[in-house]
Amino acid sequence: MHRVPSLHSPPGPVDGDRLSTARDAALGEAERLGCSNTELRIERIRSQQVRLRDGRLEGAADDTELGVGIRVMVDGAMGFAATVSTDPGEAARVVTQAVEAARLIARAGGTPVELADEPGHGVVDWVAPYSVDPVDVPLTDKVDLLAEWSGRLLSSEGIDHVTAEVLAVTEDTFYADLAGTQATQRRVRVHPSFEALAVDPDGGFETMRSVAPPAGRGWEYLHGAGWDWDTELAALPGLLTDKVRAPSVTAGYFDLVIDPTNLWLTIHESIGHATELDRAMGYEAAYAGTSFATFDQLGTLRYGSEVMHVTGDRTTPHGLATVAIDHEGVPGQSFDLVTDGVLAGYQLDRSIAFTSGLGASNGCAFADSPLHVPIQRMANVSLRPAEGDGPTTEDLIAGVDHGLYVVGDKSWSIDMQRYNFQFTGQRFFMIEHGRLAGQVSDVAYQATTTEFWGSMEAVGGASTYLLGGAFNCGKGQPGQVAAVSHGCPSVLVRGVRVLNARQESGR
Image (tube, rainbow, N blue to C red; front, top):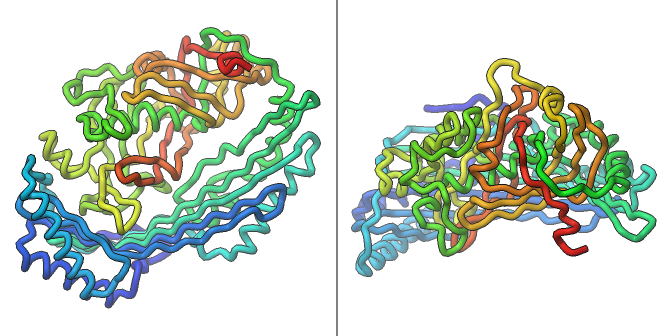
């Protein structure tokens, strides 16, 4: 048995006896029908959203999804079927449907599907580390806390409107396969945020949003476990007032010190998606594009400077993509993607691992619903900080004569090969002679992926490291959405092209 210490035991999506009976019925039917591989998932996913505008409830949603998904391999073809019923007899019937689908696909011809070998891992019980299940907190408590945050902001001079919201998800999964793995897992995640709007005397406006990341934590996160909400709430009005008055940036080339609250998104778009091997081998071309980091460049592509070390990790504490076992029965693990600036690996599921000849999967299969087939999805992809104490953000700023300090994510744009990109942010501070010299507005930075990461001169130490991320990474046809984290330190990147976004838009 594998067990990760937790304050809780995994409850399972339904009653334990029903899980056992459904498992036996489904896997027994799969063996009888000659399946070479069968995976059963029973999941309950509860998702909530609460949103306030100017301190008043604007909307609330509370959704529960429950169902059974079964994937089989028969005659070199893959079949999948699902149902919203957790009845054991229904689970066996779904196996039959999946087998029929696989045999129909096999008769249609095409290249046989094969999966990289994966041994059984016995019984696995795992719960993400949290204290208070976020979906069990009463709606009134959620509204009261968001209203209190909104009131603090609205009472500040210069703030005209405020929105505040929280997203919360608790995901209970039971997985079993013919290899002998049986995993019961619970993942939790929350994403609180608030945004203030200020209208200037000329009729224009500016906004500023909190930079707190979503986290694989419980409701305790909103009470200070992992983030200082009081400090951010107190600072935001003054920062927004300064932003309203800030001069528009003069376009040119700047040295950038980029805070992890902004850099995580650049990592997601230019590294995370680019190192998904199914993309790099063309399997996502029709929908989301391919990747400049093609398979023939593994081990040779100069992705960035020698201070660039990037890992994929499904074991990161509080990571949004952290699991004990993925949806193909592969343990969560850590692996290298970029080492000393050179492309060193890819994110893999079992099918792409076999097709590429890279050996075993590194645990990157996930489906966002029991009714959806697992596909290759992103791990927590993170940039490693400097060894030892390393430089602080202030140290990085001190090394810049003329540049910008970038904080918080906002809009982004990147091409279909994950190569040409443009990013903005929540706030930008001029750096003059190693010191911050006030905010500027209308900033966007633009580069190619290898140019940008190749110009990264220094990474901050552990004190600058933050785990950012998002709930809404999209992929696949039909589309699926997954949550993923990206850890990184502050970094110094030399000579980056900066645009004046207002001028570029013709305003």
